[in-house]
Amino acid sequence: KQRDPNQPEFHQAVEEVFGSLQPFLAKNPKYMQQSLLERLVEPERVVMFRVSWVDDKGQVQVNRGYRVQMNSAIGPYKGGLRFHPTVNLGVLKFLAFEQVFKNGLTTLPMGGGKGGSDFDPKGKSDAEVMRFCQAFMSELYRHIGADTDVPAGDIGVGGREIGFLFGQYKKLSNEFTSVLTGKGLTYGGSLIRPEATGYGTVYFADHMLKTKGDSMAHKRVTISGSGNVAQYAAEKAIQLGAQVLTVSDSNGFVKFPDSGMTEAQLAALIELKEVRRERISVYAKEQGLEYFEGKRPWGVACDVALPCATQNELDENDAKTLLANGVKCVAEGANMPSTLGAVEAFINAKILYAPGKASNAGGVATSGLEMSQNHMHLSWTREEVDARLFDIMQNIHENCVENGTENGYTNYVNGANIAGFKKVAEAMLAQGVV
Ligand code: NDP
Image 1: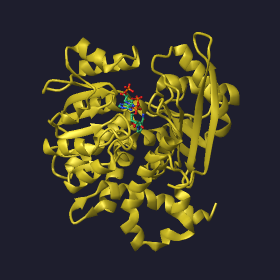
Image 2 (image 1 turned 90 degrees about the horizontal axis):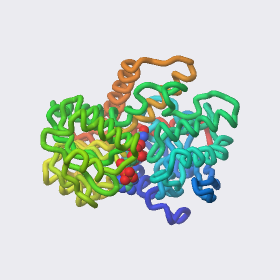
Image 3 (image 1 turned 45 degrees about the vertical axis):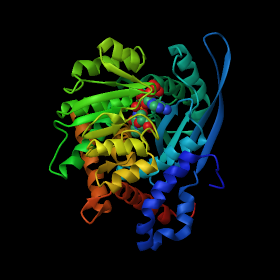
Image 4 (image 1 turned 180 degrees about the vertical axis):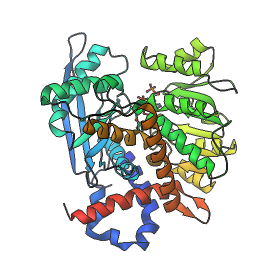
């Protein structure tokens, strides 16, 4: 905290992980060797750079770009790029730190990293987004590579942005490699990658419910966000027979009738967000649905809550409201959407609660599958990738249960942190002090 006083999100993420590791470390002192914990919180490398680009009016705009290369003990750095005005070094360090443990859980050989910019894609034309992406990659390309660091998407970085970034990387490096994931299907992308984070989150929730002899079928589900993760969490929840009651954006949320969002309403949402890039208030109007300006969806009674928007979007009071309304299961699609107080409330109430690093790991896992396909120069079918994603989520779930169960209750936070930590820590100890 003394070294980085202005990074509250990073401190929060470290506190959550090290807090839950403490009893495990006390029983396993070998992991306290070689200043291992101190090395884990210090990024191996941080790159910060100027991104200057010309807007449609001919004005020069200046943004800041970042790549945090946190830990490469178990594989090349891997983690998304976020374009959002709230991006700063502390936010990216929290995301990169979480990513290290998440990637450790996936069973695939990927280290942890994260990057992005304070650029705001909202309201920008396609041409402006393209010029920004090209300027961003003109610096980033010298720090990444198929066996060094493989970025993907995150908030504000979807298929359109990955395409522009990939095009510029290819031009500058004169190489067609697997340097980004989330690519389009015509140039090396994997089927199911766009769906993977949302699908994986719902598979994970279903696995959790199965430990109680239950499932996602007929569950009332509240979802926050309406971007990539939220859209495909909704799709899989509907496929499994659940009733999706809400989606949202940073301005408010929309409520569907008790029968839940229909497939046609989901298709309209994806079109509105991905093609017209419109707001949820417009969606509510077009669909004739109730819209709650300035509100988050956690007051709507549900069995399963899936926070899929952003960090700290669900606080202790929201958690108490959800619990009072009888929530049984919370699976995070976003990274660190629940505050420390909210997490404590869920665990004290002994409900099924999964932290993002376990439940949203399907996205990065499928990025790993995209890298494998690229390296082998082949493409697996939709069914094949989906089956692998399903298995990976099941493995992560089993790993959490194995490492986090005490007195009959599975604390998925402990399970995920211990399992992810063990893998990375073993590799770091074996490689010496580097
Ligand atoms: P998108 O950009 O596609 O969607 C983000 C959604 O979250 C939008 O609905 C956005 O609303 C909302 N949102 C963003 N910032 C805020 C905020 N400050 N307050 C309230 N709502 C906000 O991003 P993704 O769906 O890809 O990412 C969502 C979350 O999932 C993030 O936490 C991300 O780190 C995590 N994640 C994503 C993965 C992926 O594969 N894409 C993998 C693993 C985790 P608005 O339009 O108003 O900004």
